[in-house]
Structure formats: structure tokens, C-alpha cells
Length: 394
Image (cartoon, rainbow, N blue to C red; front, side):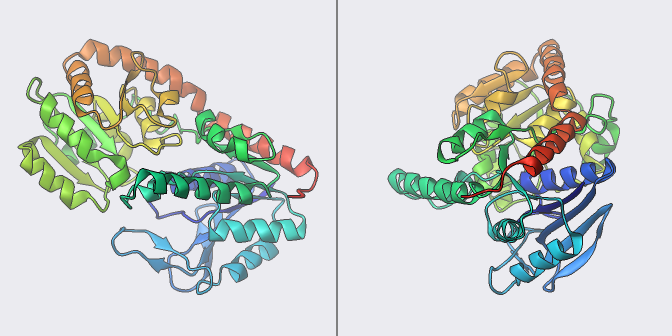
């Protein structure tokens, strides 16, 4: 099968949609399929070059200096249509898989439909990731959300089949579609993330102290609510000694470091920065518990990586996190922004090694259903069904 994946975020971008696209493309190629990706390129000129076993068609892009490693395309200036047409003409895909409804994905959908090539879509978009920064009245924010979802649905209705990483994520958009939206997990490589990984490389690299360690991995951006985690850590540390590691970069990094100092916990917090891929499994292995306080998680790849390493998870009771975190079984859910509740759960888990071990074992049982090999088979079936479907008339 020849699969062309169109995405408005890809390597070296640091976000869930980018990681999903990279891992899916690599897994498909390893399974013997021919795979190409068209996405923002690394330069001001459009490019074509191999990325592992994947052919990458890079669209002319521009850096966002406040977001390290991230580049964006401008619909007119970047020449999206020309590079997408080139990718389709040269690669001759059997199917096109778009990852969102932004410019590159839209153009790929349009060109594929025009040429009679079947298209499937996966939604990774949550408008909260954008409106979280605007500080608008709730009534205005709700209107923006409705308009954003309507626009996404308008694009996805032109695809032969549509998926989302979780049932919760699918149900959000389902009412606006003209077909059943499938839930197909992002998947996790259980050979790479597992309890057998050695914690020593990460402990040595980041000079982590002995004792219980709480971990967050992700962008240090506003919607991730790492400030809430820091405030809860400060409260919990009044009752139990433990260390907190925040791994990742983002626009809020300096503010968070300042907050840790103001809370008097700076010496008990490690800001690890961007963690190289080869060191990430070791960092999870060096932790005893994982925390995620974001309110816009359509699945949460980092929580899955933590679970695959055998960690209990503290997660906000928001969007799709309750599908991964079964409160009282493999961790605890807490109400978003509730610092006191989160701090209490931190004390409970960080002071009880037996509880962490029991909940970590439950995490392993849950995550086993998300093994990347099984997910890959589901996407292959997803593609074959779309290739046999009737042409889209939307």
C-alpha cells in the first residue's frame, strides 16, 4: 500500500499530533508499506528528502521564535498547493491520510478528491489549545469553539472515513459528521516503553535525588497547567518529601521556574528541558508517578508512555483522560484546577510504595490494549475499507 500522510505538524515539532504522525509513518514503513509525508519543511524553500524509511515533502515554512523547533506555513506565501500536487503526482498514493483540517491537510484533501484518491482523516484538534491563551469571556470562547468545530467537521465530511484517538474525542465531533467516526488509539510502542528500562542514564543526566519522584512530560505551555501542578507540589511537600521533574520546553518555562522559586520548592524541582528521544524511556523509568493536568487531551501520548513503564497516573478529569486513568485503579483523577485535591492525591501516592506498585501494575494491564502493532493493523483495515468505499459526495 502507498500511503501519503498530510499533516500541518511533523518532525521536529514537539506535540502529540507530530509524534503520532512520525510514529505512524515509521510503523507503516517498517511493516512494508511505502510511505510519504507532506508537512511543514525545515527550510524557507520546499524540500524533498528521506526521513528514515519515509519520503518527506517539506512545504516552505517559517520559524516561530517563541516556540523552539516549531515552523508554520502561510497559505499563499508557502506554495502549499504546488508541493502537495508534487507529492501526489510523484508518489502516486493509494490513499491519503490527513491529520487535521489546517492548510496542508485541506489542500491534500482537495487534490486527492479531485483525482479520485480515497482520503481518511484523523482529528487531533482541540480549540481549547488556542483559546486558552486569549482570556476571553466564556460566551465568546464558546462561540469560537462552536465555529472551530463546525469548520473542522466541514472539512472532514469530505473524507471517506474519519477517526479520533479515543471514543470521547470522536463523540465531540460526531454530531456534525455524516458518518460514524471511529476511535483508533494513537498507540504506544511497548518494546520501547516498559518497566525493564534502566533509570540510571536519566538519573545521572539530570542529577536526580534519591527518593520518590513525580514526573511531568510535555510542552510547558499554558493549557498544560503545570503551574497548578507546582502549587500542588508545594502543598503536598508540607506532608511528604518527594522530587518533581518537569520535562519539556514551552512559552511558560521561565514563569514556571520563577513560580517554583516563589513557592520555596525550587531545590525540589528539576526543569529538565527537552529530553532527547533516546533518554525518554529512562526518564519514565526513573519516576514513581506521573501527573498530567492539561484540559485539552484527546488521548495523551505521554500518559500512555508513563503507563507503559508501569507508573500510576494523576490526571485531570477532563476530555479523554478518564479513558486512560481509572480513578482508584491505576491512579487518580482530580478536578481541573483543584490544587487541594491534587495535593492530597500526591501525598497519598508518594507516601505509599505498595499503592504505587499496585496501581502501576493496573496501568500495564490497561495500556496493553494500545500496543502499536495492534493499532497499526486497525489503521491498515481503516485504509482498506476507505479504498473500497463509494466516492465522497459532500
